[in-house]
Picture 1 (spheres, rainbow, N blue to C red):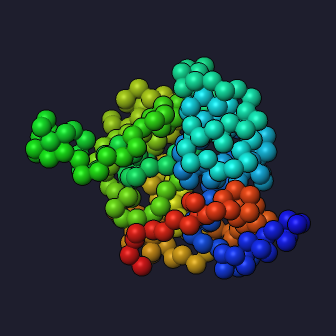
Picture 2 (picture 1 turned 180 degrees about the vertical axis):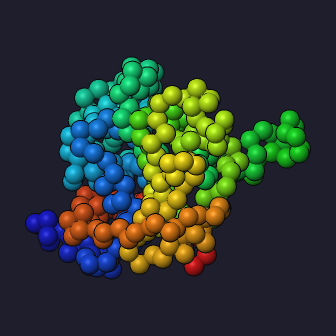
Picture 3 (picture 1 turned 135 degrees about the horizontal axis):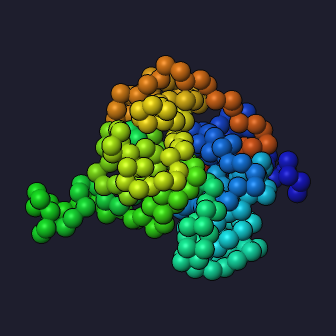
Amino acid sequence: MTADQVYQDYLDRTGLKAEEFTLMELLAVATKREIPNGAFVFVGTGLPLLSAMLAQHTDAPDMTMILEAGTVGPTIKHLPISVADPRAAYQASVLSTVADAFGTIACRGYCTLGLLGAAECDMYGNLNSSAVGGYLPAGVSENGHGPSTRLTGSGGANNIASLADKVIVSMVHEKRRMVEKVEYLTSPCGMRGPKGENRFDYGLFRGGNLVVISDLGMLRPNQESGILELDMYYPGVSPELIKENTGWSLNIENAKEMKSPTFEELRILRTLVDPDRLFLGRKSKRKA
C-alpha cells in the first residue's frame, strides 16, 4: 500500500477527517514546531515522546534524542510507553546508564532542550509530578494526612529542568493542573518565583527559557515577572476558555491564533507516530 492508501485506511478506520484535527493533535504539532533541528533533546515519558518522534520525522531529522534511561540518538519507529521501553533504543548511538545521561551529557552542558510532562504546573512554570494532597506520609505530615495520590515521581525531570537551556512542558490544560502554586515542587522549569525567590537565587544558573504547551494553547513567561501568559491559542479555541481553565489570572491580551497543522504533519502523526492513538486518544477531564 502507498502512504496515501495507508492514511485513507486509517481515516476510514478511526472516523477522522484529513482536514480536521483534535486538541491532542494540536498539542503534538505545536510542541514539534518548537524543536530545532540539530538540538540535543532530553525527552521525558508520555506526551514529550510523542512530539519528539513527530519532530524527528519532519522538521528535526538531525536532532539527538536523549532518554534519561541512558539511550542516546535513537531513531524511534514504534511509540514507547516509557523512556526505558526497548522500543526507544532502535538504532541508538549509545545504550548507557542514567549516570551517563546526566553526568556525562547534561552536566557538561549538552542538554540544549528538555521535553517534560507533569501533573501540575504553576504560574511560574514549576512542575509537580510527585504527589497530590501533600508529600509526606500521614504519620509525619503537619496535618496528619498523607497524599491523596502518589504520582510517578521526578525520574530525571528535576535534572532536566535544572540543566537544560530551554524547557518545553507538554500537558493537558485543566484548572486542577494549572495552579497558582504546585503542591510539591518536583521540577523548577521557569523563574520559580518573584525576585529573591527565582531559580537564580537558589543557585540554578542555567535555563529559565520556558514554554508551556497544552492541549488548548501555548504559554510563555513574562520577561519581567516570570509569570506565564498566553502566547498562542489553537484554532477553534477561545482565549477566554483557556483563562477559565487556568488557576491564576492569566493574561490573554497579546495572544494570537496558531497556524493549523498541515496535511503532512497530521498524516505522519497519525500513521507513523501514534497509529493506535495511545496518547492522541486521551480525553481531558475539564468542564466544557
